[in-house]
Length: 456
Image (cartoon, rainbow, N blue to C red):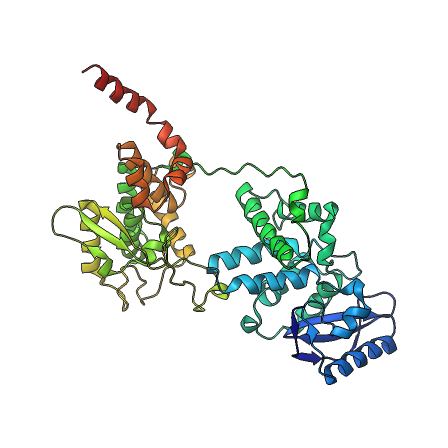
């Protein structure tokens, strides 16, 4: 039993959403609210008296069910958490060891699952209202929660009452309800394959925790036949710019806004010439840069600063300092950079300096660029650099496509995949899967080189 002695009791209230009279008893254990509905106020009062007596007698209360030890034995049908309560425990357990983006992904998946795994009770709130109370309050660790807004309290009470017991997920029918929920967007449209697979992965991890805690003998998700959507990992060659197009995009940057495009030009250049991820460029400092007056330079990457909602970061800011992706903590990645990028970075430092902490890329007030700002400047630059036909195409549709273009160029130039993977921060296996079409496109060139060697 996951138990606590931190128990608080609240007033009983009349359930206004019910057609027949009913009363809701409410209390919390270790900050986690629990409620139970009764037909009469007398029954609700009797239940609360029992709970208060147990608390006065020094009994520990089960955090998941909200019941004292003596009640667990007498009410075995309630001996187990609801899906809602277990979802909150799942979030809390993973929080400390997860990156902000992982926390956000976990919550996003549960925003689809929790409203789907409920009983058909009267007074169901709107799905948007349920997602709001889950996102802004319930699916956060206790120490991250603010005060529950008054208008959200009835929504949370309904969810607490209606949420299915976690044990019900042993039924294939219930698992299929969950899989249907993660297969569509919040608007009811078909969800992208990668989104569905990410949500299923979160659902799988939650059920694995339930197996670990002996709620299930085996993961019930594994017993349901379900064909996952086909996800596309490979880079679409139609998104990849050639060097001339990349230079045109970079040259268009100073014409975007008063100074913003000019300040951000070198950041986009790092994505193209050094294949940096946007979060790696955000964390780049002057001390990481060897910028000689002539020849090749070197970037030594140490940290990344991925953007995430402030609700999920440790710092409470829109970015957290993190280690490099696919690397051990405090590991570094050296990336040689060509003279063109060395020149751009030297000019950027001369024109705009660096932030107080040494970061190369900062707003005029020293802050970090948000994803939306990076995207807006990029869209404006595309309109400046491309023809109307190219603007509506998928060519360099996002800033991340600059990284794809860099890696594609390296591979097309005959650089060994092991060296490309090392510079890009990939494993060779991922490189070959993501850039399969680019690699396949070099088959004729490779065959020609082999044939020339054989004919010598």
